[in-house]
Image (tube, rainbow, N blue to C red; front, top):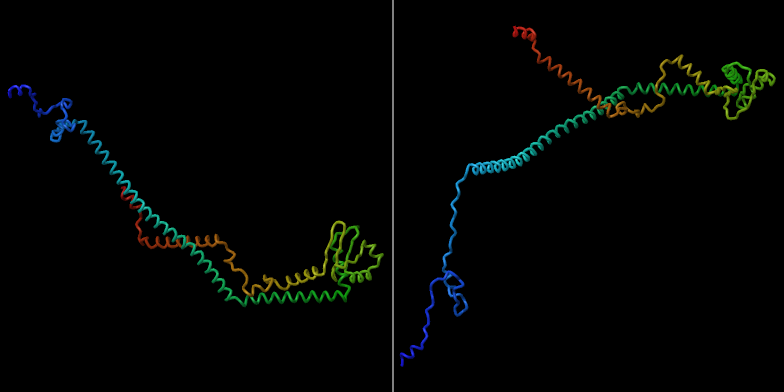
Length: 322
């Protein structure tokens, strides 16, 4: 009975624990995972086989050498350029600063020398004025005395006109003689009071005979005479006649008339010579003085360096060539 029951029992195969290379052939377990999932953790990673390096050829070596040379050249060039720029900048800055300092110092000395020369000239002229104040004062006083004398003489002669009619008659004669002789009519104007003296001296018929047309002119002063024709005229004023007489007198009796025309010069208000000079003139004078000084120094140095018994260079050269 037991044997018969065993005949109806189905066999249960054991699981295959061998590794299957094809994942599709692997079944799943009760969890729905591949049966060999636990084996994948222990699978050794297969390392790829390393390829052996190929031996370098001459072309490869030459290419490496050229590339290394170019890299080194470019790197050195860049480093040298940066260093050169920095050094050049520092050197240029230093040289430019020094050159600018020298030029500024030279220009400042020149401008200062011009101002010093101007101040020196100013003080020299002030000292000269202090040394000669009495001379200028004497000239001015002398001129003022002459001017006062001429003014007094003019006023005295003008007073003479009012009491002596011969003065105006003499003026009339000189004015008529100054015009060219012709048959044209002369229009002669006088001060109203002077006209009375002339009319008393010459009658109306005498005036027509001489061709005179006597007229009164209130704008004229005593002693003035104005003669006019169709072609010319003479303004023979009293002041002009007095000035001519005094000028002739001064030329005859005073050969050197003072140049001073007023007393301003006594107060030393006249501009000094250096004030009339421009900056260009002062600079020119300074340059000329520097040039003369440099020539003198060069000449003195050449005299000092020249020996007393200097050898004849021409004779020495001829001796050597022979």
